[in-house]
Picture (cartoon, rainbow, N blue to C red):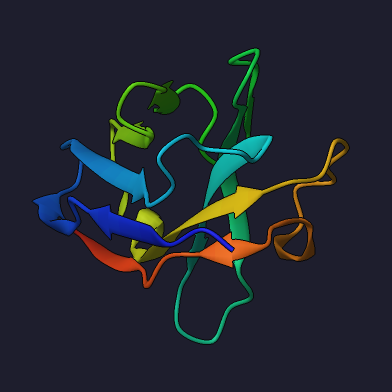
Length: 124
């Protein structure tokens, strides 16, 4: 498993923006995809976005399409989540994840490694 460390969470007003970052510990990331999930209290872990490492093809959850953008930097083994037009319902702990599968359903079970999470709070 690869170690993942997230950063960039915080408190922001509705309509604002935040950028989350996640660094993978491997010298060269050997997985096939990295993604972001989020979990609010009492809720299941929800798929937010993912990127296929080699092709940069991106996927988004329905609730964030058009507002969030995932990207990656292979030279730094980093993945980013740019979050714009934030809403109070985006409040959650956001987790970075890495997977080695070739085919994904974008379920948490598809991913092998997880970060510790970073809190995002959007005030109304």
